[in-house]
Image 1 (cartoon, rainbow, N blue to C red):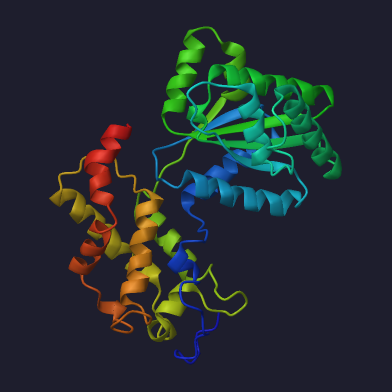
Image 2: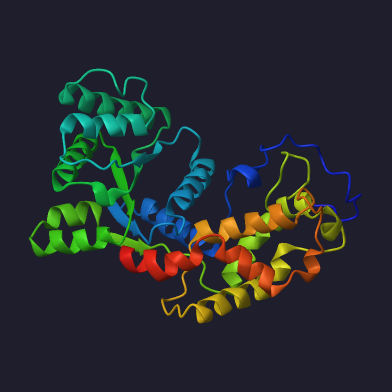
Length: 334
């Protein structure tokens, strides 16, 4: 991107439409890159299933969406990859199970009818057709919040796997969810349900948040260099909100050491002794607030971000709810 620019000639953007304002954007991180490496290897090796787990709010769902985006670019837009949410239900029913899967793959007739057998056939035929269109013998499902699945639903999923296998199509299922998934795997294994574990839980990956200054700097580089709005405008998110500072060479990445020190200070002051694992939800909100509160669109116009004080960063981070999560929510969720 160009650096020799008029800092005030930024594009006009309608209020409440910038990705920073509405929170609709993706950022590559060290952890997402690691996850992608594992997922691509598992697909290449045609494993039947794996578990991707982590604390709530560490960014699993957005990470999966980002990984799918990359996979789709590599494998082709027609390649059958689906991101399906597993809903919380009191009891499993075959009708709702296949309805949710049909809805997840965006089938036009997902909600039509009430006979489970017809919905199962509808799903099977749709996946077979998608594989044929893509000239592929693989179908990939990411099942989000998979800790909500009952054992019986795994049995129905196993039937789908077998039906696709008869058509020479390999179903790869990634179970995405909380740590509870690992407890479930242990329980299934200890009770002798080895086929279920081998089919859907043979491999695992723990998805983590930001853990060091390097993670923070790489994440911030997304705002500095690997983002753009409006599209093809050449205006990264940092440049848009701090045009004058950006033209003088400032990048959010320069704040990585100070942000790291701020996080450590807050943890010491609040006696937080958990392993350092900062959820993306709170970090992203922290950066968004810095851009919105101190950037050129704020009430006070563009702040001298070069000299932002530690106290200002602490106040902004505390305002995201990060401390409460560490002191209360994380212990409960663990």
